[in-house]
Length: 553
Image (cartoon, rainbow, N blue to C red):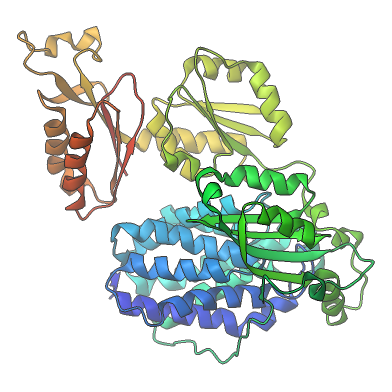
């Protein structure tokens, strides 16, 4: 029985998963009806994953994280179409999880899905229920159902059946899919990857018999006119390109602002991804030249692909049912519901927010200083985002009261401290009802194990009896409000704690340091952590009541 997959075997099952997707590309193309029926989802996803596989063909390594890193980088560069880019970002998230030299176990594989879900979700400007994206989100939430399984022999059969059921649900989640009696094409593509991985594990390896050729990518120096075919339809052009940011943009580029700029120019189906100094852009445009000019303002265009969706749709419909498509099909934006899903926001009095919070489902992080938050701020948020429901996390009691009193589709959860936001953010799904979301937040917050290092000035009067009369102990380690250790040196207090708790740190630890730690002290902590096998993350944060906060994952 297999508890851990070695890197060589992992590569084999990834090859098998990719081959199964590639061999199924025609089947997937035939059920491609959203966002436009252009019959290319299977081809796009296949070329995307083939680009990733090409990046690891000759890779000889014992590092699981490096395998996923190289594969995801190849997928990102070669990603095509909505579903292709979403698939690449799913693997980018998995790569992030395995970047700390973790072994490929059932438990780690399942936990990596939440990272993949966040990366995929963040790439899409307006998420849509019933697509590969919502399937990925549901898969990311099945960890508890399968966490008791240790062996891959038991895991893969049950997991595949679960994913099949999730994919089948997409037929009922979108009107066009219900009408055509098919599942989402991108979701089916993801299922094919998992099925191929299962077959690869059981040594029924899928062999690639398709000959994929990516003839649609063109050098950016070629004449744009060669891509454009006159048409009276209004699908426009599926446009994709890479931007190599110029020196100035490398320092100032803001992905969220870039997305807003694209939306203001009336482009649709917007997906944008940033990897180092390269931006991947996908959008539907009636005038692709206008879209390319927006990109050129930020740097050099490395690759361009422009497909005439009017032509693709006409050809797709020739081979589909002999009925007329509904008017809904004429504009992909019509698929968006009148009311969007729930949006998640963080409101905090913490002055410096770690990047880990920005890299999540959060739509916006709002910093509160000098009691400057009011109901007017809520009205602006509602007006700007227009979500059906607005979910707020806050560590500020006054903000909590303001939102609680403002009942118009605004819901709030009070955090004991800012770090409690992390597991709650990762558990969030925009498809959940506010009641379900708050219930999950309540349950998860009880499971968080947090420890604090405070100096004597931070402690309340209730702890005064613990202070040494001669002031010998300057720093105290607390679990909840109970002092469990005390030392003069806060770094020694932290490292001693980590040594004692090492056997309990099964899945990793997140450490927040205040800026009272010197660079030399921080370097000492980093050197200590680098020797540990468990997963760890270290962030600097401005805190008024603690020197350090530790959260066991």
